[in-house]
Amino acid sequence: MYKSIEEITLNTWPAEQSVLLNGWVLRTAAGYTKRANSVNPLYGAESSLPDLTDQIKRAEQYYIDAGLKPVFKITPYIQPANLDEVLANRGYTIVEPSSVRVLDMEGLALTDDLRYSIQVQENLTEEWLNTFTDLAELSDVNRDSLTRMLSASYLQQGYVLLFKDGVPTACGLGVLQNGYIGLFDIITSSDYRRQGMAEQLLLTLLHWGKAQGATTAFLQVVQANAGASALYDKLGFKEIYQYWYRVVGN
Image 1 (tube, rainbow, N blue to C red):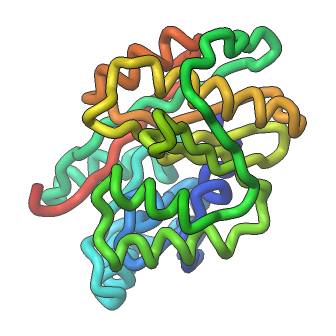
Image 2: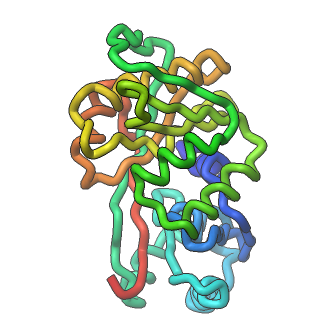
């Protein structure tokens, strides 16, 4: 039912390169984020797949040749359905169990508490990049990868920055496609958490997306991030499915 969300996430969080392998989408982006550097086995009818072990080996070799560790994203929509079990038997372990959540924005809460100044811009700026780099502690290599990924997208984007006393202390990104707004890179400075910044930032970004025609918001959150999950619950996001990654050696 929600496989279309998975398809949209492939576009709203772009990889630098995507290769098809008998229906599987193999994505790479110089190793920045598992989301953009993993096998997405969304397609390929089970009856038409080649020998599954051979298929896995081909995917593994692709990532090895790219200088990356093979990673498989496991959702309720994987094909074939027994892939997760087969990967487990090959020594792959589960990392980063995550929740996909959606919000119907028809009844979106108002941004009544405007304690902080906020700006939303539709183009990637050095100020946003510098803020996210500092808050997420990105390496120069990952910053360059992120810049290339976001700059190459032709989807409408909203880059939000929140300021306290003129200093950017939180930021986030919204990407629009087909009536959906996907939320990414939501982060608040560790020195300023639990002060209502993330909530005001998210509501501002959601209202921006709604003004651009989005009717539904979606996001992905690691299940271990209890603080973020609690905030998303408060805003009305509902879980629609879970996913995880399979990697070797963890």
